[in-house]
Amino acid sequence: MPHSLPELPYAYNALEPHYDEQTLHLHHDLHHKSYVDGLNKAEAGLAAAREKEDFSLIKHWSREAAFHGSGHILHSLFWENMAPASASGQPGTELSKQINRDFSSFASFKSQFTAAAAAVEGSGWTLLCWNPSFAKLEILQAEKHQNLTQWGVIPLLVIDVWEHAYYLKYQNKRAAFIAAWWNIVNWETVNQRFLKAIA
Ligand code: MN
Image 1: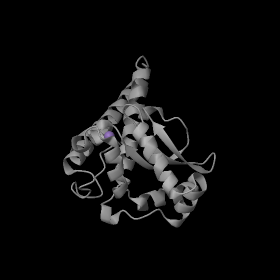
Image 2: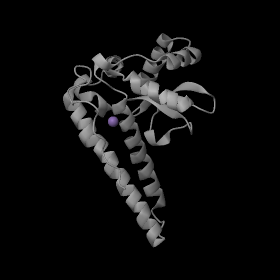
Image 3: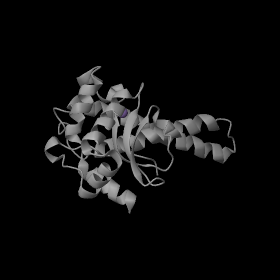
Image 4: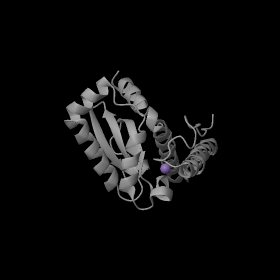
């Protein structure tokens, strides 16, 4: 079954004024769609290579699958990680306890996440993850999303800081975008993902 672009769980203008309608259209309908198309193309390329037993382009298709597959997964999480400000909610009890355990306080977690997102070089992501190997929450930066560096971690909350994610409204003011984004975090989905990760 080929991969398909997921529907947004809210209207295109539902995240205004923090995330504008036009950017959401471009980001979801064009950028995310191109990852889905690229992933399907890479998987078809790999299937054809197996069929023909011709692996001369294996590096190309493996890279394409990693780049577009990671883009598809991360963007799908990113949409789910947001909600209209009125429905934004708060970290649940279990997640709050874990945040306090691993980052001292919610304020310290938010400071570190914000600083990590502001400092990602080039085009990348910042992620709050559950690391089952260490049984702890971690904040990671992915400077190239095809190169996630801690295998096995489970992303809980992600922010896209590629310029296409915010440039139309926020131009070069990434910090302003990050500050506004905190208003539209969907803590319900983060809570659910956390409980599933530690189960
Ligand atoms: Mn993006």
